[in-house]
Length: 210
Image 1 (cartoon, rainbow, N blue to C red):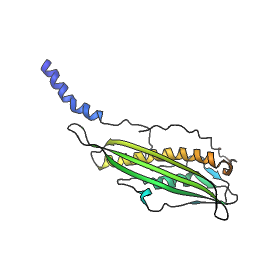
Image 2 (tube, one colour):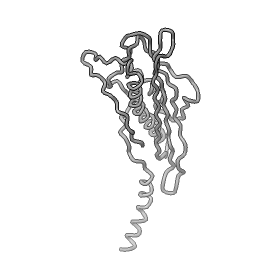
Image 3 (cartoon, rainbow, N blue to C red):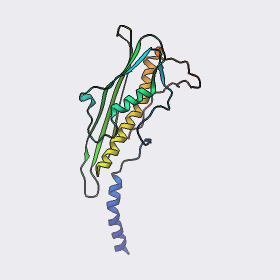
Image 4 (cartoon, rainbow, N blue to C red):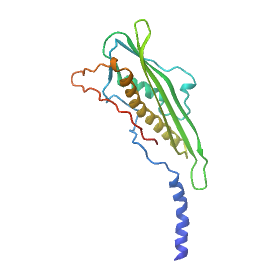
């Protein structure tokens, strides 16, 4: 009997070692491309809104695999959340940083797969522009996210890349609205459209890390 128990214990060791290297599920990430259209838009008291496509550069470096580009997620957020409600001047949304990088976290072991850390950095700025093209006011937001997990194949790498970009997008949506309401309060139109609810104040809090 003692010999049988010892064999069962030895057989269980590889399974326990593999489980020890799995990362917790962390915050829920909805399937599919990120969307912010269900949220109340931030209406600006300006006559026009420009959402600029990002330019090339190291601040926009993306290491593959990348199912969703950080810059595309930020553009989607801006298009879904911002609108021009009428007034003087204009608004300009600019992406300053949209990076996705990865590096080896641990090498493969006898009973565990190799793992990698994916990092995503997003930074953007919303400017209120005068008729003379001068900046009257601005609000900037930046978020950083990282996710570490096993990378036995390209599918697992792609899943980690997708997860970290989506989580960074969730963080950015909260941080961006907080900064806009804080720094551009006088430029927000607080009169609701018919059948529309006013956006509630965003409280800044420590978001869960994965």
